[in-house]
Amino acid sequence: MNDTLDSSFGEIASFQRVSYYQQWIDRSLREADPSAPKRREDVETTVIEGDKGTTLAYFLLEFTGQRDHPDQWLSVDYATRDGTATAGEDYIAVADTLILYSGETQAAIAVEVIGDETPEPDETLYLDVFNPIGGSFREGVLKLTAVRTILDDDGWIA
Image (cartoon, rainbow, N blue to C red; front, side, top):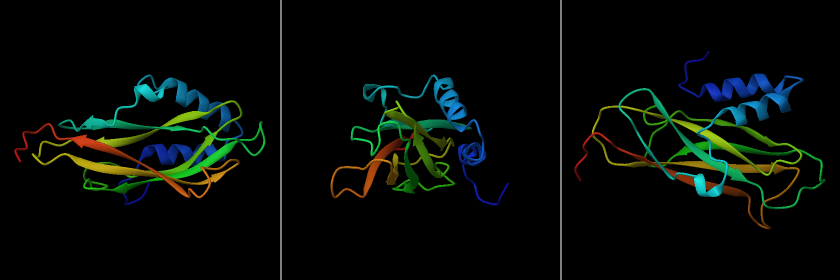
């Protein structure tokens, strides 16, 4: 526990990193979320905010390059970043490491969007992916960035 409003996903992931069964846990969690996109076509770039609780916005990380070694794990670090949305008010910030195990080419990253009943304009947040280990992005690419739009459902009028 800490004073920062951050994602329980990060706390769970920290525990998993020290677990002997990390690969099994990670794969089981990925398979257990029926809402997570499994194909590029399933990715929603917008998410409705909702009035209370949280809604999940998904990012699908797909590795299309070559691994340094065919049976090696790939890892990337990722972190959310404010656009017009603010961490702690509009979404719960996440920062962690994602591992793609041997045979895996993609995995979803979930970000919790915080619901409220305040009329406001639609807002954006970013997910930066960086520091690939065991593979690489295209030549000269150091960071990948994706954006999600949080759609206000509380009657904002521009």
